[in-house]
Length: 195
Ligand SMILES: Cc1cc2nc3c(=O)[nH]c(=O)nc-3n(C[C@H](O)[C@H](O)[C@H](O)COP(=O)(O)O)c2cc1C
Image (tube, rainbow, N blue to C red):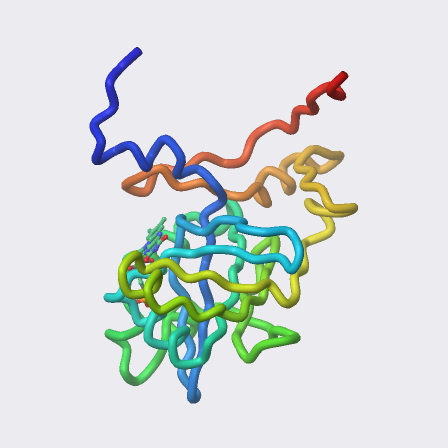
């Protein structure tokens, strides 16, 4: 057993799917990478996401009370790195969507762009918790609508194996560890039924 430096302890848990958070307010829109997004509750469905105070995303989501979680895939890994290492706040006359030539479509329940080419989308309304937000940069939100690419998610399950494996491999979700190193989600395995 190797001891893990405490500053790297988060990396042991970090490989949940990396997300792209989209936001919009007052004619401005933005997109950033976020690895620290997590399910919180079943019904009504809730999630948490950590959004740093220095981000432009934070400004937009606090103003609008909404954001969307887009789940990018292997085909978008370089884009995710770029979106996570640049700020929409540095682009007064344009935005990251235009800079990276991104195609979006409208969300159904909130006014936030969703990114084409991702494999799932969750529309979220923030449940205000000022203490958590200010102290931990932690946002709790209710998921008000969700959809997924049926090639890889149907009947409530992810499935990345099939006839056209080359295409499906590019649609695998990505899981950031650190410094631009990701895992692609792996082979599905099924546990036996408990006695
Ligand atoms: C793979 C990856 C994961 C990231 N995860 C998070 C995260 O969970 N929370 C966060 O606040 N920033 C995270 N970041 C950093 C933001 O994406 C980064 O600060 C970004 O430039 C903010 O963009 P914005 O200012 O346009 O909102 C991550 C960056 C990368 C590359």
